[in-house]
Length: 140
Image (tube, rainbow, N blue to C red; front, side, top):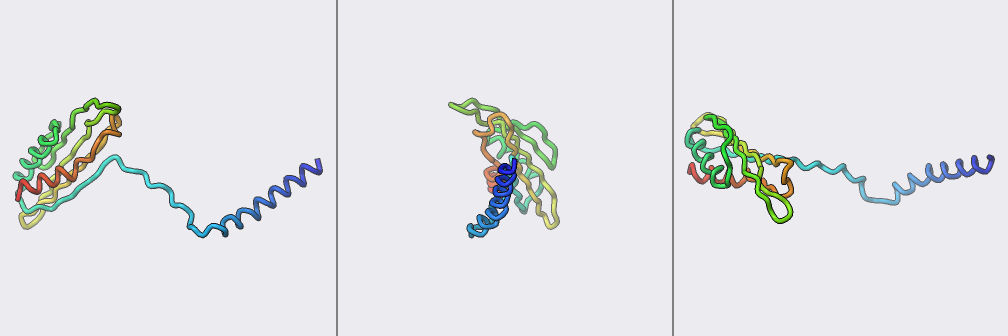
């Protein structure tokens, strides 16, 4: 019993002394916790155009990437790409949201959001930058 107690004290002592020594031996700062990757990506663009023209350009941009419009309001559009089956993983199924906010001086803020879905997430793509670029080019 006495030998177990001394072994425990020895191990506890080594752990207590060893941890600061290990911490001093490494010059690198402790690693920061990994950032979780978001399933959505947002692109915001300010355009000099009427909301009606931006809305029409957004509908064309969504149609160009294969989106089916699910909800269509004057200042917001929701679309979804159809799911496709690939070699290993399906692709498609992304949801896209376009929101138009009317600003002063004939400007409007356009927010394009891509949300990946659980089905086929590996094969899905973030489309928000491409859609925002197409909208910007169409209203120029």
